[in-house]
Image (cartoon, rainbow, N blue to C red; front, side, top):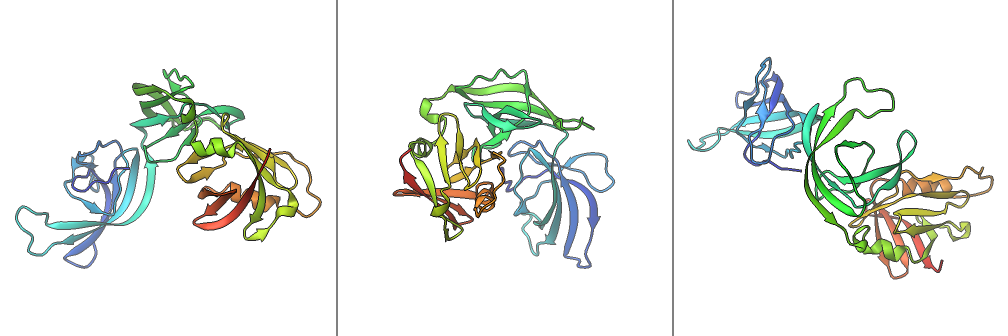
Length: 305
C-alpha cells in the first residue's frame, strides 16, 4: 500500500463547512489508478472535471487499486511561510473503499494451484496484491495468461467491473497486460520450511482455549507438497488447504465429513479457531501453537505419524 506524503489526487463530491473560520471538514472521493509520486485527481462538488490536488492528508494510506470516500478536516496554518502549504489536511474517517470500474493492477502469483471452492470444487491461483501482503485465493480467470505451475509470476492486468453479472459469476473480468517477471521456483520455495517440518509429524490437540482436551483425540496432519491438511475434530474428519506467510497461518475452505456428533466433543470450538482469519503460530520444542491476536488458543503436541 502506498502512503503519499506530498501529492494527492482527490474527487470531492460534497463539502460541508463547520462554523470555524480556521477549520472545516468535507467529504472526498479518491480516484483509483494513480501511480506513485503523481498527484491524485480530484473532483469538487458539482464539478464534471478532474483536477490535481497538491497536498498531503495525514493518516491516509492510498492504494491505487481502490476508490475512496473520505471525511477530511482542513485547518488553516497561522503565519505559514510563502513556500509552505497554507492548510493542513487530516483524515477524519474512511466512509467507503471500493474497487474502480476499470484499472490496472499488479499481481504476484505463486508457483502452484490449490484446491478451492467457487461455484463448485475447483483449482485456484494464489496471488498477492502487494509484496507485503498475504497469499489469497484467486477464483477468476485471466484472459491471455498462460499459467504454468512451478513458476512464480509478477504480472500487470486490466480489471474491469461487470455491470449486473449473472448469479454466482464474478463481478470483474481480468486481462493480461504484461508479464513483468517469470521465475522457476525451487522445490523448497512452494511453501516455507516450517511446512516441511510440520508435515513430518502427527500433531495431537492437547489444549484448546485454555482447557485440556487430550482425551478427545483430535489431531491435524500437514502435507507440504499439496498444501493441504487433514485431521479429526473429535467427531468428524476434516480436510482442506493451508497457507503459511511469515508467522501467519490460515485454513481457508475447510471441509468435513457429516457424521452426527452424539457424544461430548470439541468440534465446534476447534473449527472456530482454525477458521479464524487472524491466526498466527509458533513452534516451541515439541508443540505447535496457535494464537488469535496474541491470545494462546491451541496447543498441538508432536507425535510420530
